[in-house]
Image: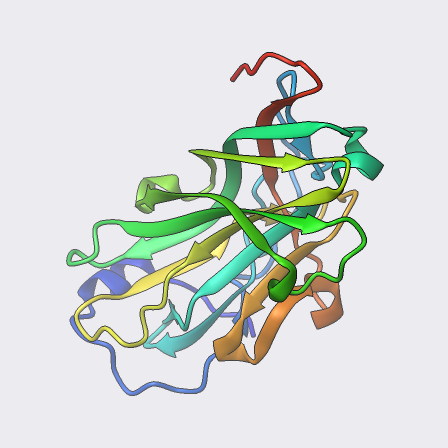
Length: 239
């Protein structure tokens, strides 16, 4: 499950070779957690104890091409924020911006950017964490490139969830590259093992993960780094 990514090799590859079966994997063996405190503003919410990006922690679904892993099928990474129970938000919460971790992104010259969809959903409080319960409330696109590796990406996205009846689900999606023989993209979400107040989830049908699934249920410790910036209870939004 552990593969070494070599940027020079992925840049040299012109087409996708014979496709093996996709599987879950990390970019490299995990290194020690170094620690990087989350920067919170009034109205910000997070489940992350730490926002540092630790190499070898992010997990994604991909298939091998040479010595790299190419994204196989859409890879969805999610967090569910229990607005009332965990954040004492019992009125409307207005999301303005989402910051999410990127451990590593590798692209070919024909793929200078990777469009990452950023989606906001409401889900009834207490409802099971399944896609059929998601109600879209906002979406945006973050155009990531190699310079975003080992950082928190910041994407403006607007949506409102009523904390008195619903939770907030935030999702970012790395797109499928397996069907495009002219482009290749490798992506690992930014994460650590410092702890979290609620689980993070992955949804990757190509790896037979057909609904959002807690990373720990798959046998991995992946604490996705994420901060949501917004305003509630009469707060003024700042970032």
